[in-house]
Image 1 (spheres, rainbow, N blue to C red):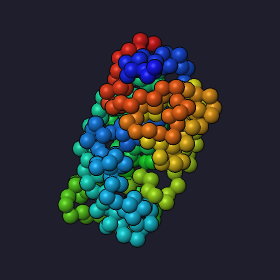
Image 2: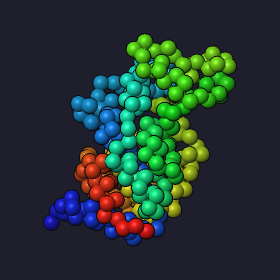
Image 3: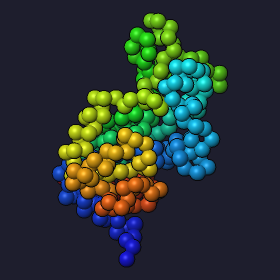
Image 4: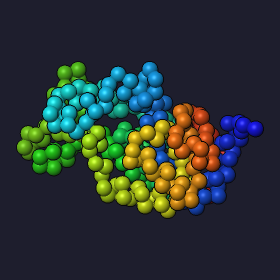
Length: 256
């Protein structure tokens, strides 16, 4: 007998109630309800009409920063203007209520942070800062946000050495930040429950973190529209909108 969405949500509530250390892992599907397209959905995904290795790679940024910024401009516009949705706020509420110890996200839009999440690892970086590849100076993106929102982009440059700044996001061909990834792995290895929300689990090595949790004995809850490679081992697989499913789970949890 196939469980209904209502039954699956109730089962997820029970898992959270019985958990001592739950970790959330989120992907691009978390932010679609905030108006930011994901990368792989047919018809709307960012990679539908672009090869990421041709526009979002470290090689392209180094050799043709104008091309990189031309691609990232509309994405930056969407991220700067977006607001956290009920899914983001639900995860922050889970943390405040003591049901969630850590949030690990692949997203660079900072919406989890703006929703109120505190214990968080942004393993692909975030759009909030930019750094100089030459001297290492770091700047808040707000300093050049207006330039990024213009049709004709004036590339942000370092005030110290005039080198073109790189947004502090992880590009293809770039290694994930070692300290952040190490801390995320420690959280995964200490959890007894992992919630995967809005991720297709196709980008590695990040997508191996839920598998690491499962291998270490943690239960998995997966909430995502599309199938993932871990569906067969998850305790709960919910094909639902995370912006609706997560608030439903939070609303049924008692106060600790």
